[in-house]
Amino acid sequence: MVNMNSSGNSEDNLLNYSVNTGYTMNKTGSDLASVGGYASYDSQWGSWSASSSFDTDKSRQYSLSTDGGFVLHSGGLTFSNDSFSSSDTIVLVKAPGAKGARINSSGSSVDRWGYGVTSSLSPYRENTISLDIEDMDGDVELKSTSTIAVPRDGAILFANFETDQGRSAIINMSRSDNKTLPFAAEVYEGDAPIGNMGQDGQAFVRGINDAGELIVRWYEEGRPQSCRAAYQFPAQPATLPGSQTLVLSNVICRISNRN
Image (cartoon, rainbow, N blue to C red; front, top):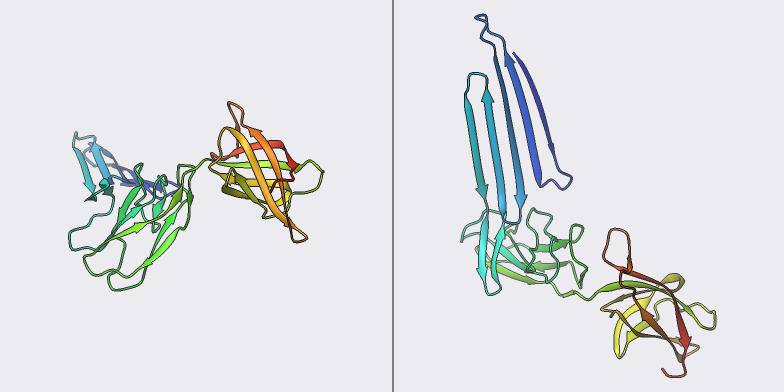
């Protein structure tokens, strides 16, 4: 008898698979070969698994199974790949725009409607409810990525994570007097603060329009200073590699007497 096996998983551990083959030599000459496989996948709709096997004597077997749960709430119907009952302690997470963010490093994630649910909580203990944004799809900023709760047994918690879904951009600016814009200077569009200056004249802003005017404000020797920069993004703007953050360069911020 000869057997060979191979198994593996995806980088995010959501997909697992295995393949096995066998060959048996009989004295009667009726050798038997077999092959089988198994795969499982944790999706936001539940956990799915499938297996199949067959051999040369025409024996075949197939199986398909699924496991998971859902919560009906005021915002809709939210599925989970966790299996839970009405007596389990669970948390319903709301994080608008944070599709793909994983909850408590489990297989459960925030769906396209901004909700997610998991049962990975312990009753009567301090639990950290956190969001892992590494696999998050959208261009969104989370005001916080974790919160603390001490639930009762069988409780359904609600964790609301505030987000900012405004479009983000990095703008490379220089002053009209050739001086460097101060680090941490505030960037405004109209009366609304939308970001800050970083190093080397790079401003990180969120909620920016296609075109408009930015105002950079700071203090120099105790006196308020400001400059104004007109901007316009092209029809197909550049973005940071691997992200949706826009990039705009060569923007001149002209020193203003108006603060």
